[in-house]
Image 1 (cartoon, one colour):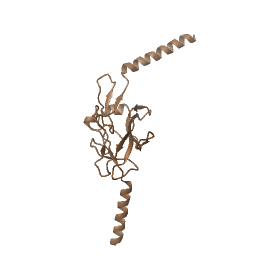
Image 2 (cartoon, rainbow, N blue to C red; image 1 turned 120 degrees about the vertical axis):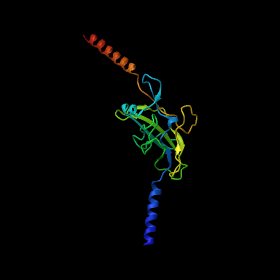
Image 3 (cartoon, rainbow, N blue to C red; image 1 turned 45 degrees about the vertical axis):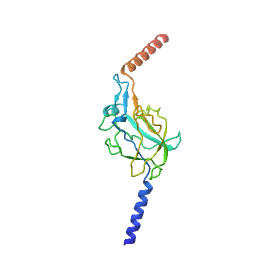
Image 4 (cartoon, rainbow, N blue to C red; image 1 turned 180 degrees about the horizontal axis):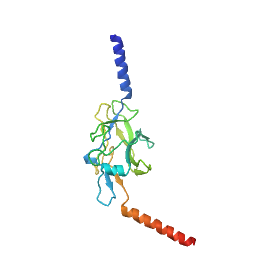
Length: 192
């Protein structure tokens, strides 16, 4: 009986260990909040309502160190939580918790190339793609996870500067519609 319990416990530990991976703190903080620009007002921290209106999805991509070809970990990873501009954690709050990167060491120390991207879940159009991949040393599976964000004026080459999502001004959209309308009118006149 004791032998069976020991074997079962060993198998359980081996199973858990095989799924344990290096970690990052995907959630940001008030000091690294995601901003929104171009809405007719000064740049401000994005709200959950604005995220929903833009169908904004924030995801993390990973690959071997120095890689430019990255694989998406999970679509829809980031959601603006209870604090404006702050990505909710896996638990649905703004606490920085562990986020595992597949195929990495549970002890931490694995260097992986990461990239943060933001896109429209309805159209697939990218909102933010200019964040170059950076090499990040992952934290251990048990934590603390490696923090990946820095302030907007930060200079750390191994951390991301917060996203600024730019949306067209209402006046820009109106101007575009007017221009398109005049082109159609001009073309119609030429056809006659």
